Image (cartoon, rainbow, N blue to C red; front, side, top):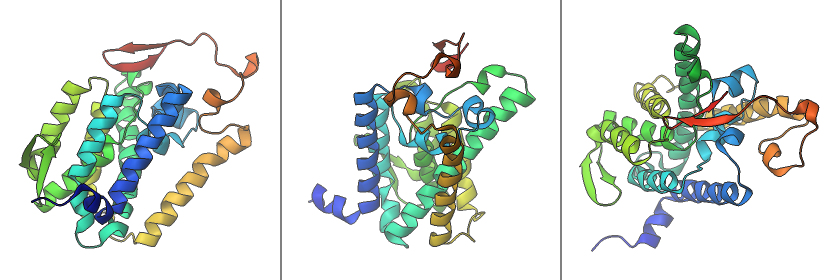
Length: 257
């Protein structure tokens, strides 16, 4: 007889809390009709406009319900990491680290493709979702050779195969999902697995994330803007609104033209 669901939830507070936060943010986004453009991560908005807060708002946000359900299911499949050495503190520390590193790697991919290789559409590609962190965890567990991965609660696969198989499944089930964002999560997972951040303690990771949040909000405070302000607040004066800009979806990618 399996472990009761309520007991599993109590045994994995980090995973349960993360899932609750993702669901709450999705409900908030849906109720307020917030869009990809408001919270998503793109090179143009994050680096050229200095909206660094998008590194974390993008990864905690979901616009599509199916994408959210897929990620929550996958999140629970990697929750065994919370039961190992270090427990919840280690789990949350590593999750925060994967979030920051995968966001940075995603922007690096956009820079290489959009700036160095001249494929300008990648400067406007907008990504959302917690998938990168989950892919990071799958890669980390695969590198350690631990456990099995549940596919939507229907079937199981060896953990070593989970990053690649899930990358393909996600691209099929949620065509709008960011392939580069998922790949960035895999890169971040290998970086953590190989000990590149082994020097970072739990308190150090918390301080790093706190400083990144503060520094990302400074430009908003100076300009009088906050995350979601364009979705929640009154209309801005004509002089502050970007003109001649329209949004469209091309091959599952949000672009501004």
